[in-house]
Length: 204
Ligand code: MN3
Image (cartoon, rainbow, N blue to C red):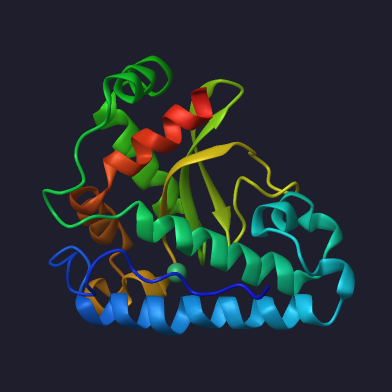
């Protein structure tokens, strides 16, 4: 069973003005599609790699080819990222439970946003910023390339609640080198409803 590109859960221009239509079109249709295609190529050459869920592959990825790490991570990260975005005004707010955990573990919502953006801005080259649940507490982390907190080789492992793609392909057409401006706009299109559900599942 080959991996497939999930459709965007909204129109390509639905995240404007934070993220423009052309960026979303190329990011989803070209970049994410390429990760899916190359992941399928990577697992097709080794029978021991076929028939596994993407999560199972990533949990043991330190023992697998780099093509699975890079393209499997790319597929999983982007599939989650699309779901964690929503048109302005449609993403809801942090649930009472998530807001309380952000207050308890991260010093409040504004400090969390500042620290999350700093983690994304400080990630050298390409990578991701993450909000994870680790040992029952929220934590802000970042990873290089297409690594993620699900991977056994990650420095900080945990269950993802929120993420932001900080590869240049995620923002360059509109923001050029201004990654912090992209990360500031990101908060206007966060799908808190999805983050709340991920947090509830991680806390159950
Ligand atoms: Mn990307």
